[in-house]
Amino acid sequence: MYLCHLGSRRRIGTLLRGAKSTHKFELLFGAESFPHGDTLGKLFRRLDPDQFQEVVCGLAETLIRRKVLYPSRLFDRYFVVAVDGTGHLYFQDRHCPHCLTQTQQGQTLYSHPVLEAKLVTPNGLAISLMTEFIENPKENAPKQDCELAAFYRLARRLKQRFPRLPLLLTLDGLFAGGPTFQLCQQYHWAFLVVLKDSDLPSVNTEFESLAKLQTENQLRLRTGKDGTIHQRYRWVDELCYLDSENREHLLSVLECRETKPGKNGKETTTKFKWITKLKLTRANVIPLAENGGRMRWKIENQGFNTQKNGGYELEHAYSRNPNSVKIFYFLLQIAHLVEQLLAKGSLLKKLFPKGVGSLKDLALLLLEAWRTAPFSPADLWNLQTTPIQIRFDTS
Image (tube, rainbow, N blue to C red; front, side, top):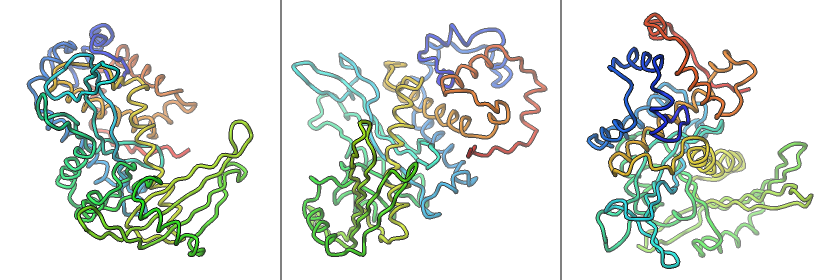
């Protein structure tokens, strides 16, 4: 359903349950028939979402252990993980006791957001590493769940599941504070947190004062087509920050001001600024900014935007049962990972040298192949016994 971008459970019955499709399903999985979408919804009510979360973690772990993602590490060490929240489901009436509520202009909206930790890479991968559902413990809870509280739960689970994995978290300005710095220090994680001008006033003030004096900590770079993009980097190390619990943190601040031609011919300047505990040097500020801090947008574009508007219909209610909702969400993450590996792998390049078009076209090809292409026990045996090598397409 997800790989073929069907968009709803109903279309399983109309598009996937033909004779050849059912034959493939029986051959691959030993099932007596192709399941109905309603059967899935009923079954998922009785299953444990944590087992599906473990499947998602296991897929990412397999890619890491087999060194598929090693070339994408920052400084040949850190796996860059973007953490961000997004809306998942919205209802006009209360969906379950765990709904978050928001009242605007006298109307109450019931929602189920999620917090995602996605492993992001320069070649465009955004792989779900772990999910934390943002939900109230019960109806009429004295305090609603929030993204920050979910982050602390997610971080604890992430450390337990991947205790030795060297991570660099890239986070938005919501997480710029002592608890996040302390948590990353405790877990031995590096981090790059967006620093807005309105956040941590003492750090911003000290940065501006010292950056004017430390002229050696500046770097200019021209990039883009014909060098039309001008970047100016400034950084300051060992800024002292005292958090609300009187814990002292030595932090570094990195700023990049990027000027490039706008649509109307006028130049526009965008400021990016991050806070970190890593030591900043002329050799590492550009990789940190480009392959660390600015990688956070991939969780929005390649991650959430693709899953919402690229055929997966993340915000569609595939079920109203709270348990089934989570399992459908995890299955969506698995399907998105498979599609990313398929789209960026070398196998499609061999079969379609001129390309297959968009991801929508790829989903259509998968659907038609599943519906119409013959598949025999001999084909299955060849797939299981013939060694193949898949590499990422870097063209």
